[in-house]
Amino acid sequence: MRELIKQLKSHINRFLVDVVNILTSKERLRQLFRIPIYSNALYLMIANAANALLGFAFWIIVARLYSPEDVGLASAIIAAVGLLAAFSQLGLGMGLIRFLPHSSRNASSMINTVFSMGTLTSIAAALIFIAGLGFWSPALLFIRHNLVYLAAFGLFTIASTLFTLIGQTFVAERRAGFTLANNLIFSLLKLLLLILLAAFFHTFGIFASWGISLVVAFLLSAFLFLPRVQADYRPRFAISRGVTNEIMHFSFANYLSGLFWGAPILLLPIIVVNLLGAEPNAYFYIAWATGSVLAMIPAAVSTSLFAEGSHEEERLGLNIWRSLKMVLLLLVPAVVLMLAIGDKVLLLFGASYSENATTLLRIFAIAALPLAVNTIYLAVKRVERKLRVIVGLSAFVGAVTIGLTYMLLPRMGINGAGIAWLTAQVIGALVIVVSSFLKRMAVRGNRRRSGIS
Image (tube, rainbow, N blue to C red; front, side):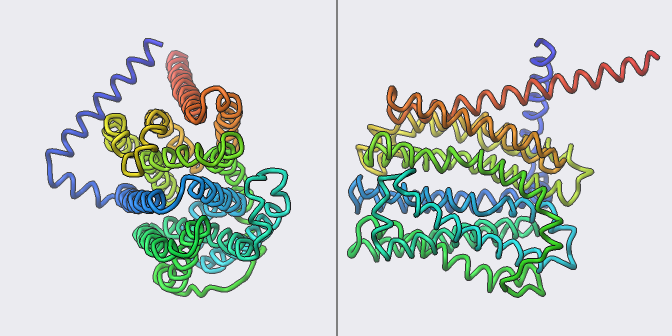
């Protein structure tokens, strides 16, 4: 344990020295953003930040124009679409990032195959969800009884799936700037549509403005942006057996990992609305969306690390260190700021949101720190193709979060979901740190014994 603490202090000291050197030198700052792992991470962070900030504006307008019940129902429907999209992606976005850099001749075929499979699985997922609404979400049964809701739900599920996949295509090609453009189109358009639809619709106005924006953003990216990244690309429905054979094993493991990891993110609003009702879910969802701003930092850095590792696996160790420096430099001050002014941020949505969701937001802010450790570790294991580790960690975090949420919600209200999320992330991070330390000590021991012999 003493050795572990000693090594942690050494790494922290090195990190602080590097940060000071970078921040006090304009030339080093310029050099920093010429390095692909930093530039791509920066684009992704800006994309996520723009999406988050404009998402804030979206939900602030929603909270002002609609009742808490409308907000709670619409957020649950959006969460359901996101959950189905996560199911429908089959992990193929991760497969693109890992294999597209080395498939220049088959790049267009690989992209079209991934998009086509995503479309088919989205349709199947939406149909299954609608058929079983009475079982897994009775509060949303009204979708099945309204033809407009029904058609929109299916279309927006497909759009949500393809929107994510095309963003991962840009990341795979080291062109994350187009991901930024894609997110800006989506975020700005949904604000405009929200205001236009508010006079005519209630819950459906929120859902439609969100979903139509996804459709438009994907179509523009597919027909305007993607051909600039892949010169010979033409969108068409096609599934290549050769492509599926190449990437499906890796993609399926990441698919399971993504489902387990993303299940709490997408299921918690549905669990809250079913157990506590629409109004508590409105407070939960706004705190969850606000706290996710912090999570975008490790998410962007880990995605960039995965993309760079797929291009240059031999430099993985160096890029891990770079990723840790970047995420800690940005995340720690952001967490401290959120803890200090989180209640003021929630006032933007209304006094009731600040009164009911501040504690939950602070819990989510603290959870961003162990979350960073876990996401970077998963990126490393994806590069190394350690598929069992990826699935195992994700399954553990998902199961602990959902299980504890069901136990704590009746006792603690919406704060129980935050405690569940924080507990799962902390345990996962501790296991990673301790196991990495023990592995390093074992390697050192073997080296010493080899030297003695």
